Image (cartoon, rainbow, N blue to C red; front, top):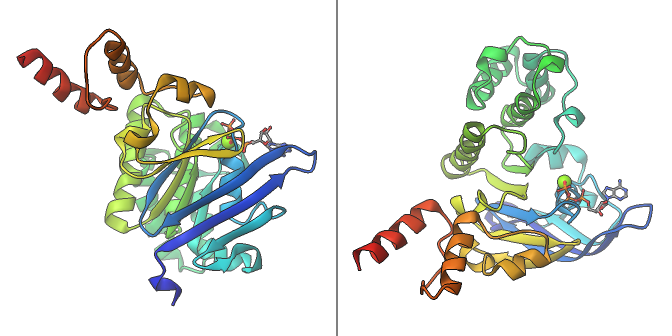
Length: 281
Ligand SMILES: Nc1ncnc2c1ncn2[C@@H]1O[C@H](COP(=O)(O)OP(=O)(O)OP(=O)(O)O)[C@@H](O)[C@H]1O
Ligand SMILES: [Mg+2]
């Protein structure tokens, strides 16, 4: 009956310490629902990567539980985790290992037992999705950082996971690549129903995409909610070594100058509408 359960991942971690004693996660309680697109937003060292690894069963020595479709992830066979959940590592060099782009992307689907025609069809589609078709036969080691990142994501797309965990998917991508990557993730989420959890510190990008935002600070969950709920004031953001999106910062400063806005706009579109109204008056 797990298919009926709207909660796909339920994290309830009292504490996780690395072997050297670093307390990386403390009192983390969050749920990821079927079809959700949520962001883990936090500064360097706030625990994003660690938390993603608990959701993939890679980190196991915590006090607490992580449930995948209602089952304790530590008790599941790795095969049953990887059938559902895919994690894209922060550093592409930790993920890529084959010589050529095609071989690397083909590894997952081949391992899943698909026939060679199906494998190649999946590779072609995935490379197209990340705009790397022209690099299909290239040597992995000759690719730029951003290109490697795309190949990693293609490798996961080719496997067709229901839940994708992405660690800084847009870090190292150029501005157009960043937008295209986010649009691709949004399309996977909306059209294909893929549940997405994305770790990032890009405060300007997060409000562009709907869904829940979980703010992490020093291994703790500081706030969860929509972008409008979590981005409130520069002071609150500074406490966790983040800032407001630039657009919101501009309006926040104008508010200090005496202008009154009901809500801080978080995106250029929001801001444009607010300014147009203001200028009409
Ligand atoms: N293998 C490890 N051994 C000891 N401490 C670690 C290890 N990996 C991470 N840490 C520590 O755990 C904390 C959380 O690290 P984590 O990598 O999860 O943060 P992050 O939010 O992903 O940061 P970044 O934005 O830099 O990727 C940090 O204090 C980090 O120094
Ligand atoms: Mg990280």
